[in-house]
Image (cartoon, rainbow, N blue to C red):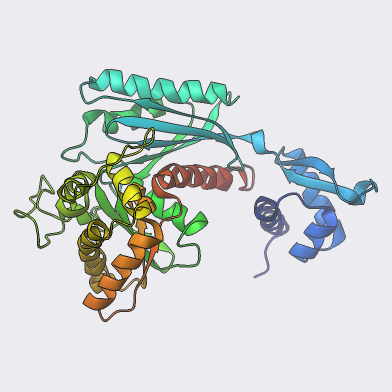
Length: 390
């Protein structure tokens, strides 16, 4: 059955908006060429989209102005404003952006372990409000939040997780109450994987595993282009993976004795101390990341080999179960280790597994969480606004 005229118009409008999103400003002639629509159809959709406030004339093409045919149409970027949050155990970072994802303002606030739940939540929400004002965003449309812990696949809520501060779970509710915005929460490692696939090391892969190496450890699993969460939202909780070389076994409430005890930041700092390695971190840099970076810069082979031995255990484990073909070493430590660490880990995985696996270094590092949260907010906002009647 052919589409009704209204359905056809809606399809054409969304096609044009997606082209303007990905290609940038286009003339009516370029839209005609890219969509395959007739000239009258393109003229109609341009008029509709302008009337709805979604696109506007942003300039003209060519060295000389040539009238209506030279007009460049682009998406109205300030039609909606977005925010992205990276919620850590002791800090919150926020970025405010326009509908196209261009960053307008960013800020970070520390939240110490002794801060009360109410004070921590207020500090985080106030940070979002201040940063939105600083970026000229009068009203936020969508907020993407990246946080450690499990996301309930049925409700989308952040679940109560041992070892994480109470204010993490309270923050989402407070944001929803205080801000006239849609609030979306996702596990931080999953967001990092989304960012690495869109803009980073996995841009050419639809199946891969991101192995997060930061203050904690985790993994995100993308199979056939789809992020896998598992029955309880716990896919990738690799910190709990029982591994050799630790003093015990993990439990249901603590990952001590699991892979976390080999490759988490505290374990890496201890490993560096055993090798007599010292480094001064840059502002806001994890001490463990500074140590890994210094080891790479100084070619400290014994430390790098020992670290690669540890990381390879986690990488080989996920390879044996999932056969992803590609493992990205993400997080602050993965970025600090770069290709040097990734190469060493790749050699060890190849020696342990018959499954061919490429090990790559993160391009985005710790910044991937914010980037992934912003992509989530942007896609959700565009999906709503670009819909018929949006």
